[in-house]
Length: 449
Image (cartoon, rainbow, N blue to C red):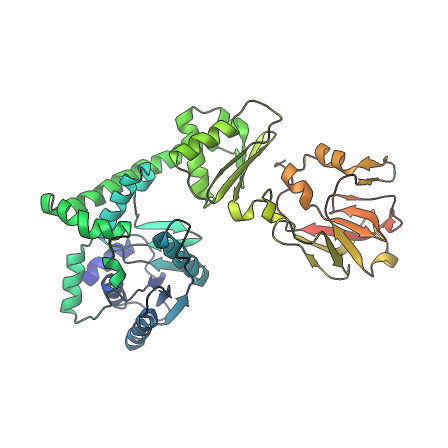
């Protein structure tokens, strides 16, 4: 029976007691999948989530259909509403997919697996799209039966099933499903392949979908070998989102490209095209030791400083103009925590340190500013007064982070630069002990030690 085959395919990729969340559109494929999985799943092991993209006039009615069906089958149900940009970006298909997966990732619990209803014809379409886009081995590997994506574990137990099999099973079980008219719109790439190209291919080569699935499996094997090679090439040179430049320089060009693609996937960043990758390598590997090149493609920024490369998503790039706060001055009551955003972190007074902040000054209205140039301080009781610019350079602080260091002023005199240095010239600094100034949860300041 089809239910037993689906259960066997699922058992090959998840534990028997796994908690499953079905991405339930209400269409044929996900309806058959949900119907099959409800057999033999214990309480708390199965629920369904529907994503309402709001792109069709009947979207609310489709969500209600899914809710009623889950209620009849006694399956917990959630409906997630997302906003999809219809212009710009990578097109409506990609925008809807990105919004859908982001909503599902936010909804999933840590111990749950997301189950999708992609089948053999979907795999064929994915392989063809990858081939036409020149996506390489990782693209031809298409959709694996299990993968990590945006912190989720995705499983696809229907990849060996044809749509014909699923439709026959649905008809035999008396199931009712939704038909999304947008699936007929040939202006979308996938729909064009599905309705205009694939029928011709299957007319000439009836086993096209099965052959594409085999190609995807073989490509996945090759992909795993390339990933193992990249991991071996990398060794311990990758520290979080920071790569030693010498590691990249030691490889020949093909392995350099393989390593950068592997790092992007590992950090859940957009993988560059061939041209973007070649341009990035040419920029990042320039010979000038004092160069600070930037490699960029949509969604990704790679910055170089001294002997390291730093990988950022475009939205979290500390070097982007948008990363700077609009307010040049922030007022801070030092008895509270001051939040400055994901790049600049937060400030608070807690614990003790030597030197520290004298108790009589822990009150009132402090100011937090950011570098304007020319700032000076005395970083210790026996130190000379120094330019902050020189101190930052000597400490190896990343150039794009120097403008994000909070400068704390009290009575219009510089008191501290983050928690890097207290100004020993300020009367609020108690040399022999006081309250500690803490700067936490900011982006990395320096290369790994």
